[in-house]
Length: 337
Ligand code: TXA
Ligand code: MG
Image (cartoon, rainbow, N blue to C red; front, side, top):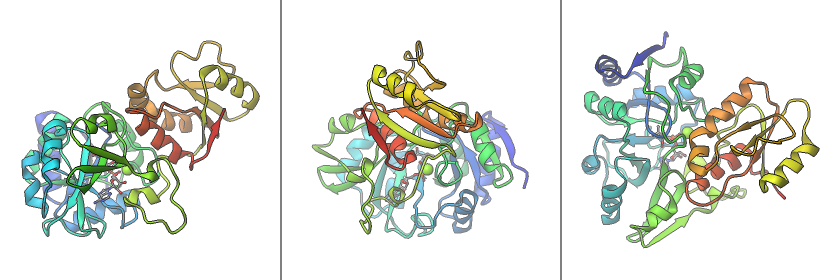
């Protein structure tokens, strides 16, 4: 199959929507990361997403709606709290796990009775959903286990020959995937995956916000995952990633002792001045780090890094999302200095 590159002009978006309507898989831009989109209600099309990614069948896909008011078409029930969250955060990088109805096939939900619902804000993506006349199931457009793509070029590299087309909507604005939440009860939400809608932002609206243990801790043998995605190794480039919690000065000292062939250091922007070893920077604050992280992980593979020590980000705000991706890429290996 030849994968065509479409631009985000009217014609490109029309063509993408047409392909999706006809059951094809298309790489599509969103404000978080690029997705692999197909008609969420078409089982064969959804199977083709799993095949292109090499994704385990029990890992559910997020369903993207043009507008939150459509939620009742695809779900059994919606808590009042979900509507209040939608008022603030939809469209945007928030996915809510809700009980699905029969319009969403089990292939899409990975066999679960729930479905993740998101209303993306990227204008091209919004237009594609509208033009397709359906709702779009889309996981991140990387091959399974690899860092998520934040540009059309990343998607092409992972998916060329495996999908019908990729829509170029520019560099992803946020750079990490959406915040995924479920509802424990009428007043409590549980964060299953942290993202740019932070715990602090959710607390503006929700009386209680729980950070699921699996966000920062490896699942114990036999422990049930609140979200299937928690079970799998993720976000890993070919290089070995090792996280180091340290101040800028302590990290430079650590580098001086641990540098060598094939070894790189991923540091905060602004700390490169007297850094003793080969390094790349990934931003000076959590928002920049979220924006750049996946691109840098891919770049490190391109330059042939074999081992990468990363200076760990802060764990609050958007930093929790960055920390979560890194600790999974590192297989939960963290050095604390
Ligand atoms: O920003 C995003 O969310 C991107 C863009 C394309 O929208 N999508 C994305 O999809 O990151 P994916 O499939 O790579 O990650 C979705 C995560 C997985 O870890 C999955 O296990 C979890 O959300 N998830 C999806 N549906 C769920 C459900 N019904 N219950 C629990 N977890 C769910
Ligand atoms: Mg993913």
